[in-house]
Image (cartoon, rainbow, N blue to C red; front, side, top):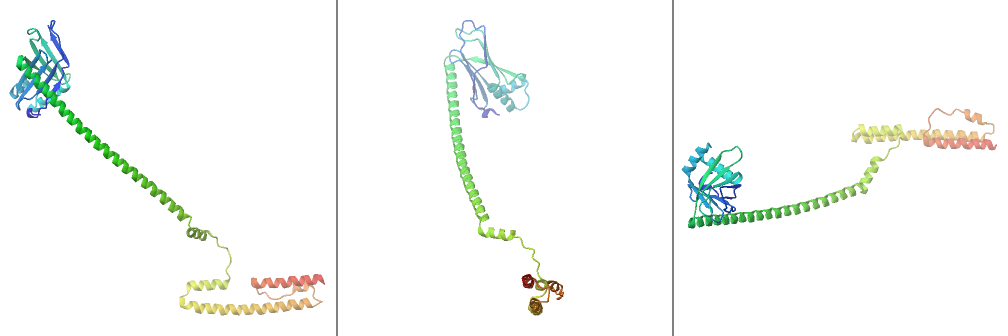
Length: 312
């Protein structure tokens, strides 16, 4: 920090020591450090009564003081050390003897940033009459300006804090609205999913998909027809179907004739009084397999014959 950038410092000494004070009263002291010009640094101490002292140091004097203290580095670093010591360090006001009725004869301002760090000491000169009044007025005006600046800074911080609070409230409200809309959307989506799962079309598809097929054996001629439909081209399907149809019709005719012969034989057996049930059972018809729908009719005839025999 350079002297032209130096901000005024106000404070109260950590300790006030007055050697050989006698019966003189000890008041509260304040100190003020500021730059009356860009190349000067002034130290002012007063109790606003009869004890007011000051010391003005030029930049060259501060350089010499830096060398005496033994602080290396740039001049701006030494100024920073003074600021840190006066603001946050240990500041003592040491007074000795008596000067007249109300004041000390010799006063020093001693400051140290922290324990173990370099100590610098500044001898102060007593101000009287108008010079003392002017020094006290300067300190009072400086305190007022500093308080005003802090108040303005506080107002700005409060306004900024209020703006942040408003922004936070607005963002919170937006977030709540988004959460509400999201919740409504989720409920709507859930209802749509439930309606879709309970729809008749989906139930029908589910039922169709879950229906178990029977293990019914497809007749050989049907299988051939199906396999032909899968293996042959569309142009050959009609020809194959007609061929299979004619074959099936021929088989139907043969089965019809065979069934007619069987019925005739059964009828003759029913009319013949000499035929026994044993003969009927031992009669050899053919080894041809009768289709299922034909077997029912044949079994009906045989059962009827057995009933007639029992009647006879």
